[in-house]
Image (cartoon, rainbow, N blue to C red; front, side, top):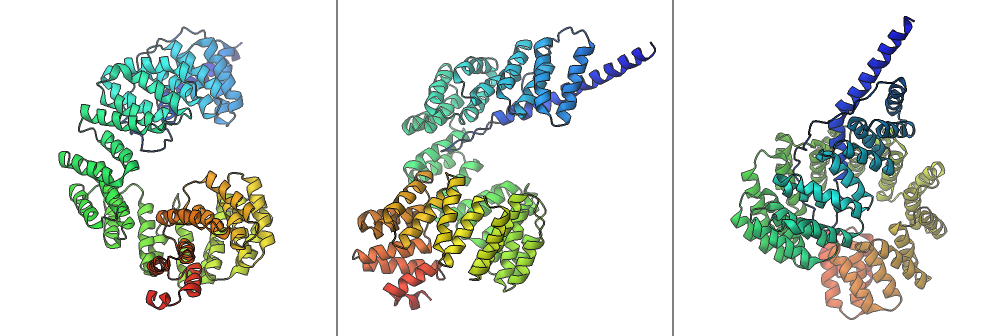
Length: 599
């Protein structure tokens, strides 16, 4: 008998520890779960970013539980299973405990465990029990509503959303911003718009409610309503910067100039609006109004000299404008100001030094990047700089000595080494290297694609076609593989109808890709459809003034009788693409007099 009290004390201690783990984990767990559920992947203008507000946490009314051995055993088993990474054991046990006890702490723990383990039905049931046990708990209601919305169950979620909004009238604006972000991920955009309009109807004087409707309208393709509602939000609250940003981005779809004019007016009334000024500067750069953009850079830095985020944003805008002096100054200033991602700044500083052919300086910056998210990219760039210095064998050795942490990194390192070889015109070596890597990973679509491109340089069309078809079979949404095969057929002037079908498929998968547009223009040209060809090529070149695209567009202009336009295009393109093989070859064949001028 003396062992029984000791065992009871032991089990009680374990139970207390487990309950403590549930209670102590709850705040962090609920924040983490709520935040993940509220992160929407939206398209179009950026969704408003709500500022977090403290959730109401009323005192829980806990059930009176008899501490049975069976109850303690189940809880202990669930906690141990979670620690061991066995959610298939833990989740059913916690859900059963939630049903039996109606304890909100256990139901909350079951909700978190089920959601993390991707058991959505169990998570919704557990969240329902949690809310039933604590009907006044705003966080429980928000989590349940968010889960229902994430599972596309907008009907059942609506009542919870309405109570969510009504339960906290002082923060209803922030609640609408959270809902906007949450619902942006739902695929039924029209249903989301209908729901958001219904939710916002009682809150017509709340600017964030009108802005939430604007976001839903944009995602549903109703641009006119999006502009009307964002304008209404600004009329209610002229200083609401997130509404101004949304309205500008929506205007930009019609015209950059309209968006620029709107932001200029907004900034006159609200000169301290940092994000609005950043977006205004970005639009000026996009419109190549660099002198005006520079003034905005200077104003931002003057207003926020010690803000690392601001100096980094200004640096990126300066890079976009090819203002490397300003970019370098601001990147260094962001490091001095304690910017949160210093390795990102170091990589950009390395790229600027590399662009200016200050290779030793570039090596210093890339070499200073610490292990983390930017490390692998920095090291591959480090190797690229070594190769540019004529130290190819050293560059390859640098990549080979890097320890890959996983198969994906190993593939990336192989691709980087193969690119060094291609840049050095060592096409056979690149082909062999990629072939060896494929022996270890025969179904890797990236290796198959790169090996196909290396095969093209060796005129091994048989390998190119077989690799690309296999890559497509493995990854049917691989737009680049469809495009590469279609373009190669067009370039060889073979099986043109098939080439067109392949490129059409690529365009369906990636409709805004300039290189795929270029391929379509080229195959249409090969088929004798010059007028249609010009349309695709001109759109492609507008999106991306690349040397290959310039070669194709110029040739089609030349053949269609627009030789002066072709000469001007090539002359301009050669200034930035003097080493492009396709451009050089085309100009040499059709207008060789241009080449000395370009040099």
